[in-house]
Image (cartoon, helix red, strand yellow):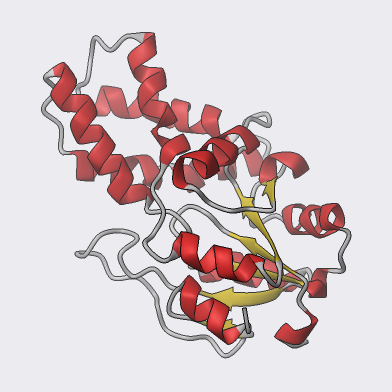
Length: 237
């Protein structure tokens, strides 16, 4: 397989396209200031994200019935409010905090890079985020997707193969005509296992400047790019 056969690019979103941690910290600080709350919002953001995969894995194993990411984020939030000693929040407060995930800010290169890539390829999300979340995020951040594809449509969470197969089928393409773009190697390997090609775009600051992430190129991936603008250059867009 070669990138020349690619017709569509599907993108992981959290961490790859948008800066979830920076946004959660900024929004949390504003939320807390308005309500007189003293919270280490960096630690809160990290704890919220740390609950993400375990919650999805419970659904994948059948320990929880299918529910979308908004519901899982809310379940994790309820636990965090207890562990961080945040009491007395109204239902409206909790819902407002949970919906921060709907308005995450993009990395600086994301909109420009996607706009260039869209000239040559179909560009779509392929995220564990639910459709409403991803749609609202696109409106907020100006992300120029051709379509919103979500794990919700397959009723499975990545890295289940059903998510990738469903995406290719909905696009009317063979798996090898789709390239998964992600900052996370496990996502790319799962996509490759069903026939997708893979582009690795590391985001060294996803977890903040104090935490190292794996940014090393992997020869198993068809493309390695520094950011989305570099990806556009490498794919001739």
